[in-house]
Length: 569
Image (tube, rainbow, N blue to C red):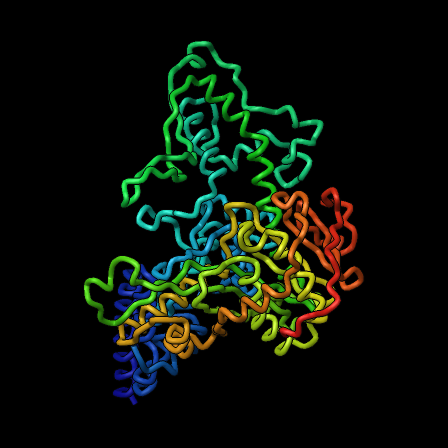
């Protein structure tokens, strides 16, 4: 018995020494990684085998003992953050970054970024992350820190670089920004960005009356010239983009006149610079409001789509130049290169699982991408509607309940914004059995959309096919190359004969539609099949009825009624 007591006393003494050493070692563990590995060493099956579990209980909490008891591996595992952001917030931030008002999609076929084997078309930020964070907090009910906001930014939304320079800038924004840059440099303005100046000279940049110079409180606000005469008479200069005519000689030494757009420098005084900026201010404010209003309108329409509605975003992509896998030198230059017309876009329809009152994460519409290909170089109104025929058939076949379509495009007069296209819209809306149709035009210089991303992706796929041995010599070979490599895009071929069929639909003479260049929304209803509504801004409130907010004068335009209809669809 005495011997047993002695053995127990020795074991207790040994345990006390061991515990004191372990406590000393634990006190030297500074990082969470070291503490985790230490706890995995001093607890587990080994201590259980030698009946030393009581030692670990004096070092670690009961929770740590239970948690580490069944762990046999000594590998370090990072703990998940307990304050992980909700999926709803993540979706809201990603959708915010992808809005056209906050980032613009890169149209080039090489403008891609790959992360974890996922290749996506780039989007370039239009503002700094600090400004976008403040804008997000103002427009959403979520509370999120700046660091978390930056962490949730999608990897394909990047800052623009000089190597990826913007060649599709809006000329009005660029010219006014030149003036603001110089005025800030001369310490006349505290603002560095032209957009920030809107908040200074207007009561509310989101209010139409203020931005259209119709507000009684701020319509007289201008850039102040209340400075000492020494500063006002100081010599300076500013840049502007201008389009001028130049005389050149062709290959036959014949003199020809061509239009070119160039960046020119103009010398002036600071006072003249302020007058120049004030003379452009009203037009710039109006331009900014229209651009933002049109983006907000189509974003809201896509967010609140009903089951019988569809949004079709469309645009002509830059023509694709045919390529062979191997070419002789003479085939690479001159007129040997044939081109292919590409008309791209996305059809947005309501998600059938979406229910009223659901969170924004569930409100994402269904996207159907398309690309129509043609050997014809025509981009006029007849060509536009020939390219749209297979898209409309795809939409009505896939979603037979749709009877309302909202088109969204840029506004070139040679393609979409002209009297022939307006007439064809009424004709095909009627022949398709639609109830309501609207066509929304983006502001000049702000027509970048998801359609540009489709064009860049398709052309990149075609180039990849050529690199792997394919020859693309016409529209048919282009389709054979890209159709199976891009299964998510619906491809169609448009023949010259299809365009000529549309030509036959047009009357011999159509009267010009007044205020065509001011139009930003056309409306059509089957109640007045031969008429269109004319609006200088898109209106969500009035639908296709008479608009009391943005109607032009005249607000209705009637086209001649054709007795026969073409059965194209």
